[in-house]
Image 1 (cartoon, one colour):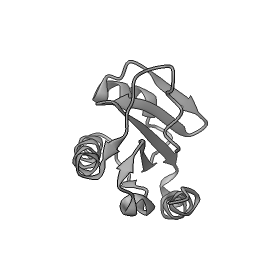
Image 2 (cartoon, one colour):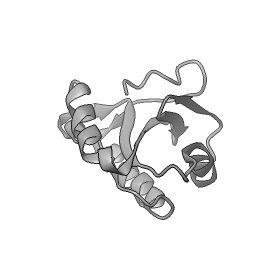
Image 3 (cartoon, helix red, strand yellow):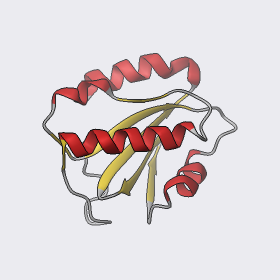
Image 4 (tube, one colour):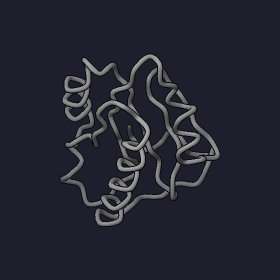
Length: 118
């Protein structure tokens, strides 16, 4: 959410639109293999021409440990957690996974789309 959480901690760069959406598909498809709940890209980003990060909203149950699962799925060198947001770098792009209870998924997705300033 802003693409700045990993500055000075690991290398990230801006992605152009085409390469960004290829990575979005790859990340979401991989996450869907493991996570039970809904996963979606914050929709407001579609109008941008380049991206400093990828914001995903994830519906997660209390039984799931997102940090543990993300570590196993993507093996990042670092995962930063701030409340329900877990941030890591993948292929030089900052990924922010915003976790919410399944019953709050639609509201969270709408909220973060509006709040993203896009």
